[in-house]
Length: 349
Image (cartoon, rainbow, N blue to C red; front, side, top):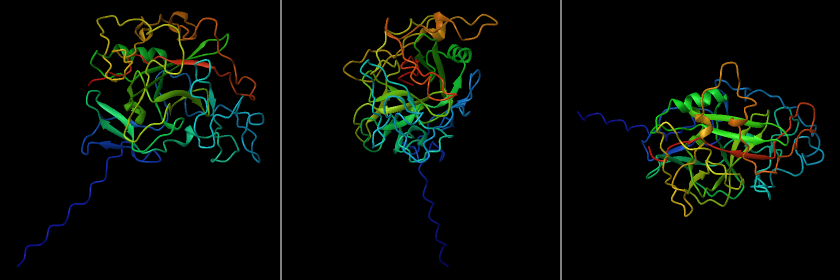
């Protein structure tokens, strides 16, 4: 009697680190390799100490029900359209050397989902892949061409308060991977607005982006439903398929700032080497010493502390409140902004 034939093994489904939460799967290379475990989220979530819930809708909607959203009639647009006909960001760093603020139409706007002012909120549209690099641990690349100005992905994670961001930084050893990013935005004659995001435990594909001193992505704060910015990454140039995606952790790329890295590591913390390999490589990853400052005195919050929110705007140049007259509920938005990731992640695992 012939032996029964063995049933063929079922084909293995490619790993999607996005767990089906993005429009397209985010694959991993090489096959069988698995990044460190984390909980996937396509958008920010509220973390310890956050001043606002990123999921809360606080902006009113526009009134563009029977007409397209264009500057002059749409309350979400000021000055010029954010995107061109191909959904590419128009302003990749302003003439003054800074990215202008971007407000998209939100959940309360009656305009359709195909509205030209809805780009970042539509999520990832490119085929992205997490892959092993030679010296930098995991990295991220696109499996297709990315034209200049195209939205790639967000840097999404837990939105933290200043105290929690500092606590997490202090718990790390020099060899630990650090994903915390501090985004500081400047308002004319007003305070510095700070946003701290950590995708280490809860994050998206953006957590795998490495630093480069000559990057191909630009980070721009984009606001949709509230003043909590979505940290959107756009192609700063035409990008080839399988070219590693990267951005400047210091925020200086296409975003003029004063001074160099904010402080120097203390308590024996060593600068982490940069392996970007660009012709202008600074040899070390950017560093923000403000997150290593002493703990806050009891009873004092993170607001109004000049020594902790030093301006990154060149002297004599201030931002403009470009959204203060949009409609009731819209807050003033900063024109000048800067990112100072705090030793965001070691370039080598």
